[in-house]
Image (tube, rainbow over all chains, first blue to last red; front, side):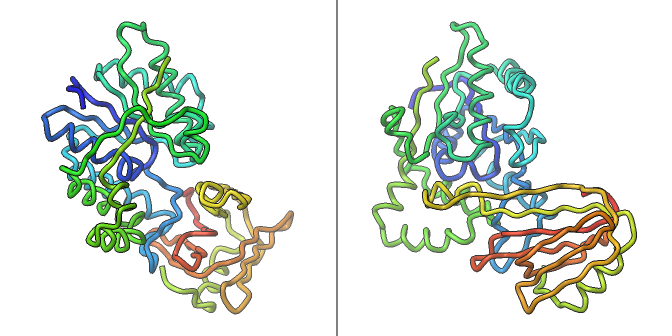
Length: 221
Length: 114
């Protein structure tokens, strides 16, 4: 893991950071690298409401906002930005306006690394649209001043199309923080956390690998 | 939310009848359905803040429940309703949660926009 001046993480939903990236975030904050997390929506349209359901369509954004703040605290993120878009609508926003918004944040923070979704290979339309807006904003910058962009991809066809991830971090050193960040998103992860904790205790290889390894694709402009 | 009590829900539906109301109506199978099962045909729809008036409405079935609101120019319909709540703003929130507790359908009625 290289030293970074500032890391900017851009995802559309609270908990997008939890599964595949929170170990990387914790590793950066642990070494004193400032991390900004820009989260586009509050996951207003999520389906997980707790079981038995404790959230409603209307209370969910308030609950998820608190969960996001808790996860950010766990990960040592001091600059958390909630950008005010609505879940499931990112792809319908004006692309120019959206990428200008991303561009303004990048210009303000001057990050050396941006982490976002790989457009086209991130399954959820909000993921793809968010990644596309970030890529577009970076592409418009002069080549010499562009930050690195590390993308998260997980569509079933991603390796077929874009090959294997070129970056794999072992984040086992901060696994406890990662699990705590996943757990912070109670409304969304409650159903799987019990199962995950048990499997982790029994050193289930598949779950261990998912917790301990995080992979990224460097975006080539 | 609590499991539907049919008489209470009917009373709430009646309370909003023949008044200008805002409706949130949604069905969803989640954005990941086709990712986890490629044979699954993903679909869903929502409308937030349809402004309308209904003449009367009914809750029917033995659970999960169906709800129909009759307008003089059309209908509002939802099925699979399992839970309800009147929130602190007096809005009627109806939802259908699947067997793992995930939201599958939502119908909400209020006098102010959601």
